[in-house]
Image 1 (tube, helix red, strand yellow):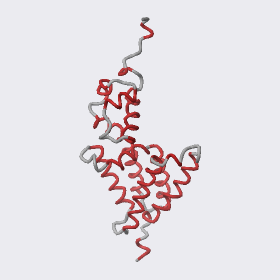
Image 2 (image 1 turned 60 degrees about the horizontal axis):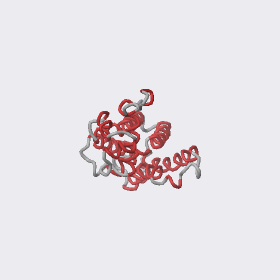
Image 3 (image 1 turned 90 degrees about the horizontal axis):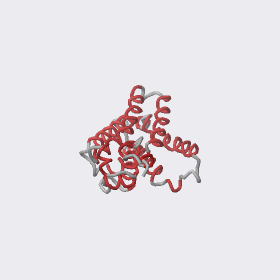
Image 4 (image 1 turned 90 degrees about the vertical axis):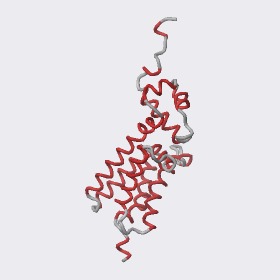
Length: 204
């Protein structure tokens, strides 16, 4: 066989790490972290298991690689909001940033929300959980009502569910991406606004 026709070893293929991360994320989101093996990830991506281990020391390490970019982005968004949480422009920018985050990292958020309880103890999951608590504490006044806290949960978890599990009724054939984004903006603003402006004060 001519040497030019020999395929390169999978571990040497360009963008191997990126391909494996994308495949792992899809598997973790659809099957679950516990139900996904490194062999399944390798098979789905067209690699050998040894090639996966060449790039990632373990399945937990791969989960960390998959989720960390999303956590880093959310932390940046939160830090910017915390700098001036009381300004209306800051709240509007937070909603816009949050929607961009949801659209870009929908599978990562879906993975965390659905599996956080069962994956406690894994560093990347614990970091994400602490960040969600910080986000909730920032958006919710310390005296915020149960209703307001539920609004926050629905805004976060409901949007993630709709964008992933509900894609059958939010496909591009039914609603253009721009229309989905605009609708998210309206709904999330309505859900988060009562928390952000601390409507508990108006009830006193």
